[in-house]
Image (cartoon, rainbow, N blue to C red; front, side):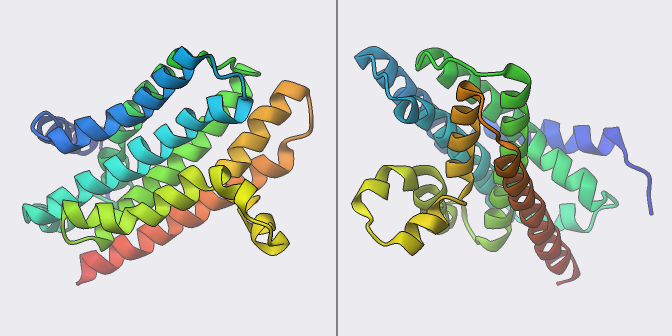
Length: 233
């Protein structure tokens, strides 16, 4: 097993940065959560759930969608095969491909917090929830990118992810089935809402943190399995 190499990670990061500067689709996608945050801040929305929505939306869009598009673009350009066959380890590829998306996601989330005038409860625990969610959505994005053949296909495959993980809370009022509502409560976006509202009220949020961490670990494991399969193929 080759040791972890910062140089290989940096090479992947620099390549992604150069590709991003030519990708208007990704740049436009990144602006969507900021637009919603600015709109909510402008109308003076005081609902905690609505104010937190752009932050969750940013994690889904900037984390999963952008990551998926960048991985799928590698496949379109036939450069992903070279990356899969390179000496870079699974960890180096995952970190390298996720680094730029991660930085952009944190920047967009920060922008959403400022524009929506979101009052951050307990900064250390809030930051921890963002980090766990970031790992989760970057893993999902990488998985979607590996399963997609083109950048356009990521939009089709990723649409259910956006609706379920990003906007399900908006549809809860229209659902009466208790089983479905219970399932929705265990989705990452709902867990994040519970954590943030719990931190604000001083409630216990350990269980929500634990379930969110399990989501992240399962997503990373699934991504590694698919990546190794693609590498062998």
